[in-house]
Length: 253
Image (cartoon, rainbow, N blue to C red; front, side):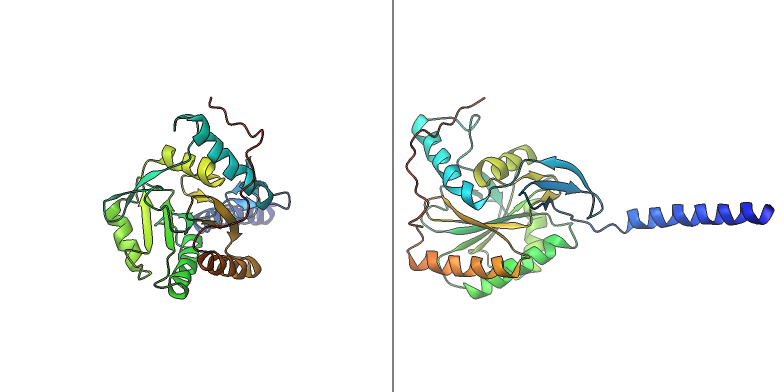
C-alpha cells in the first residue's frame, strides 16, 4: 500500500512539474490563429483557442473596407467615429502619419520587440523584402503592439538587428488603444497587446488596401512579392478594387 501511495505521489509530482515546465517554456509571441472560416482565435499554448475575435479582413472584403474609408471621408466623420488616417511615433522620435505615406505604397505588419519567436521570423521576412526591393519606391512599416515597452529608443536598438534602412523601413509606436483601432479600423486586423495576426498588408499610394498575406505561407509569400512588383510597375496606385461607393454606409457610435 505504501509503495502504491509513493507511486501515485511521484506521478502527481511529475505531472505538476511537467505542467509548470510547459507553462514556463510556452512559445512567446503566439499570434492570433486563423481557422478555415477566417475567424481568428487567441491561443495560450499555441494549439487551444481560448477566445474568438472578429475575423481579419478577407480578400473579398477589401473593396468594401476601402469603400467604407472613402465614404467616411465623404461624410466627414471624425476619428472618434471611424479611423481612416493614423499618426504614430517612429523610432527616430518623429511623428509619421498615413498622410505622409501618400503617393508611395507600403507593407504593414504588427509585432513587438520582446517576442523571441514569431515576430523575429516576421521581421526576417521584412528584411528579405528590404533586400529584394532595395532602392524602390515602397516603404516597410512595423507597428508595435506592446507600445509601453517599445519606446523609440527600444525600437532603434531592435531595428539594428535587421539592418533596417532608416528611410525605407519604419518602426512605429504609440498608445495601445489607438494602435488597436488602427489595426481594426484601418487595416481590418485584430490587434491586442502582444497579440497580432501573422499577416502583411499591402497598401497602395492612395491608402487603399491591395491585399493581405500570411507571410508563413509559401504561396502567399510569393504572391505578395509579385503584387508588390506589379504595384510598383503601375506607379504605386492599384487600378482594381475601386468599387463605386453605392449604398455603403458608415456610421459612428
